[in-house]
Image 1: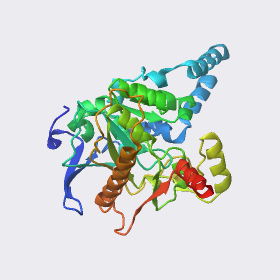
Image 2 (image 1 turned 180 degrees about the vertical axis):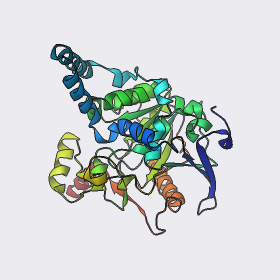
Image 3 (image 1 turned 120 degrees about the horizontal axis):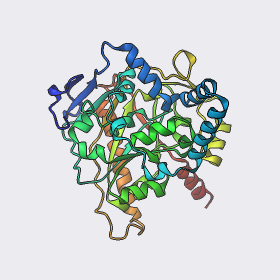
Image 4 (image 1 turned 90 degrees about the vertical axis):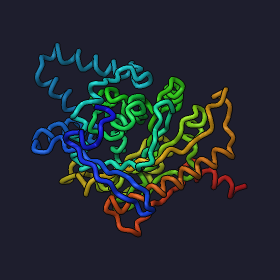
Length: 373
């Protein structure tokens, strides 16, 4: 079914649009669960553990309650022992093609009324490698699911199956120690977001996806505003250049409104904790005051055209030319801002809404040092 025409794929719809600049694009949406609201709710509730972090602990609690203690205790201890000793998040060895291709993925997209916007000019050559940049982070970068869902209803997979098939998305190290979240990430083809792990998979020919704003971005998130932590953040540019991986900007509209954010509450202590430990604690709540995310007016995931980088160097360990790093970084920032402007009206935003680019913590530190000198 991969490569099928849009009108031949059941349970999907496609609408051709023109962006404000006159460029052509198609906006896609899945309808695999139309007429089955309870089924959709069940699967969305189970799979949204990646967002609310509760199901894994609930499943272990049920195991403890339902089984004899001499069975439940060894099982739970064995599970946690495997969690702390396994290297699967570094190797990606537990990737399940059947899970990544399952219809159940669509339950999350349809819970949010998610649409996917692809420019007509988008071309992702399966012989090339890519680094996808996901924006914004919010609580979770749900738009990233599109790059790993290997089902015909996913237009990105339908048009570029070779690229999606070799995608590996990076998840923060802390997530690999949350029950059930770990399993769903592994089955979906996710890996640890550490630089060594990303380097290793790129060296093997994979394409990767990264939430560029990292742990600093959720602390900057405010409802009704679009902010990305990108100024001075150039490590992903160097990573892409080491492997000749072209860089693809993506933006998920309305993502910052899937939770209510308390931006100012204990802001100073939370920022200090983030700087010291690289762990962020956003103060949020979701639907009905629970950890369940709000459906929002409907997420729109826009995927931009790749920004070309120089060919892979003969020695990947060699430091890239910082002048070229700066040039590509500037191109990326401009491309992301253009992507935002091109699709914000389609997402239902007001015409005067802007994307704010914030300095990353490392850029702020450099500025402070420069002032002292």
